[in-house]
Image (cartoon, rainbow, N blue to C red; front, side, top):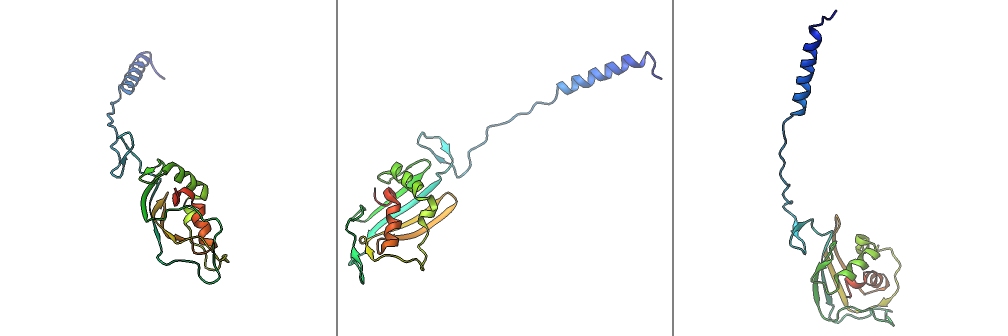
Length: 170
């Protein structure tokens, strides 16, 4: 059975324990350095890399024209008639693309990376020729690598080209 002398000793030990817990060691933290792949943003501060980075080259095929039964489209789609090369970034919109905001909006509306998927060979396509333009697109949309060529040679390819809107025709 505890004696009267043990109670004050227990209180002192308890008090010292609480005091020691309250005086715990201090922790010094330093701000994190930006990741090595961080790029400066428009404001000059480092930020995450853009969600989308694409290199777009528009050329025309010399002597290209309708083949077989294909006939020119009655409404030609807008696109550069001279060769052009642009860099497009999205999130944030930028690069040297003539209309990066519109291009990023059209890319999102077209389905992002899915808009660059190849037309399956078994797809039935109309014989509509849209023009001699050829778009070569390389880069990435999110985590998806993009490396494709889009033409206006038939109805399926023409649809892919037009779905990308301002990305290929600013």
